[in-house]
Amino acid sequence: EVQLVQSGTEVKKPGESLKISCKGFGYTFSSHWINWVRQMPGKGLEWMGRIDGSDSETNYSPSFQGHVTFTADRSISTAYLQWSSLKASDTAIYYCARRTLSGSGSYSDYWGQGTLVTVSS
Amino acid sequence: SYVLTQPPSVSEAPGQTARITCGGNNIGIRSVHWYQQKPGQAPVLVVYDDDDRPSGIPERFSGSNSGNTAALTISRVEAGDEADYYCQVWDSSSVHVVFGGGTKLTVL
Image 1 (tube, rainbow over the protein chains, first blue to last red):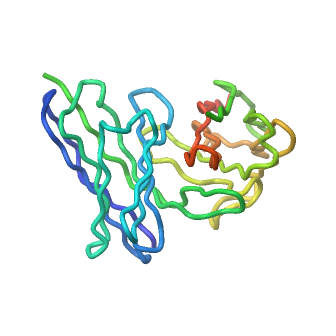
Image 2: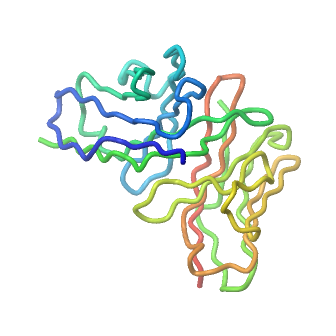
């Protein structure tokens, strides 16, 4: 059974750094990209970008470029999302999702349970 | 960048048919995917490639896509279908995933 299991809730102060994780089970991690998606409180889904599970190639949405970093360690089937300096506006739930190619694009067929990140002084 | 437009809300009585639209410029040439998100839960894929269903998704969920509008149709709506629904496409020109703003389905 395919599963993505994310790390737990985080409470941080502005300016602090953070790294959250997403571990894949039940499939070949290097055969798929991982999408990262943000959901701010009461808001919709926002695509942050993606990372290739085979070679760690990345694409970032312009809205997040320069503020977050995606990494991956295929030896342990894990993708990471990190911040070097958090802001209060980073408060959100962050989802990882497995990307699968489709007819003329791709979709996210399996999602992690989400990681709640709260940034507050 | 490519924009997807969804109505903020749709309401329907149990047993009726709910239709949630997703508008985009010439969206009919793209593959459209739909996600269901219930309160406090992660999104779940319910339709992919316009009109295919993942295993485990009821046949009551179907999709269509033509011209400038894609749609998710839910037949015989149940209370358990109450959720937010998001459409999504891949924008090859920007190499980005694009989500619609989401539609809240209320079952009356």
